[in-house]
Image (cartoon, rainbow, N blue to C red):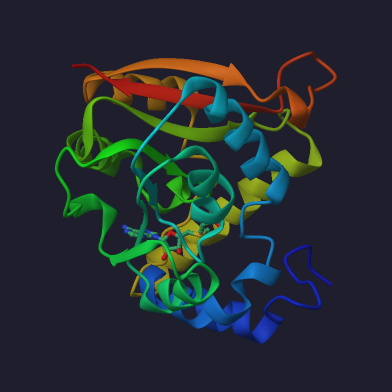
Length: 241
Ligand SMILES: C[S@@+](CC[C@H](N)C(=O)[O-])C[C@H]1O[C@@H](n2cnc3c(N)ncnc32)[C@H](O)[C@@H]1O
């Protein structure tokens, strides 16, 4: 049994079908079983983020980028925002699940590399989706988020510490990314998902280049590694006035 399979989640054949589709179509196929899969952001990460944002708020309007089935809207934005909360995703299938789960939020189908919003949000968040963007796409993505935020608005997202070089998780992620490269060299449409291409130092300089002031906050409730480093940090990127 692979670590990606659980009784409530998609079976092996479904995962293969998803992996041979485009990113968007792949998520349409996965949507009905997505919440039972390990690809949904775990509640403890969402709760730690909400707790940290409660201390940096208050916020009125909130946006969840690549919202999937709505976990971040439900467990984070609805807890920390006093006004309208919106999820944006390009998969119609994922949005249908999100709409069913949280009918009182706004759900928008769009590619986050071309957001249909300007100076509309006080807070933008995103969970578990940055592996879908190649490093060269980050400047466009971050510029779109910057433009969608009001002056002074905050873009926040958790980043896990990279696994120790040579450890089992290190080789698992390395193997996944290598398989993805081979798959994308041989098969179209591409399914873009790379675990090891979203590194904090590069991400921080891309955020600064887009006009954000960047700080990070350890999410202490998620623990520390044996070397003392936090297992997960919350990136807080603020748009200047
Ligand atoms: C791994 S899921 C994460 C979902 C949710 N944020 C969570 O943590 O449970 C990634 C999501 O990103 C969406 N996505 C990927 N690339 C996108 C893009 N360019 N524009 C909008 N959505 C995108 C996918 O459709 C999918 O719903």
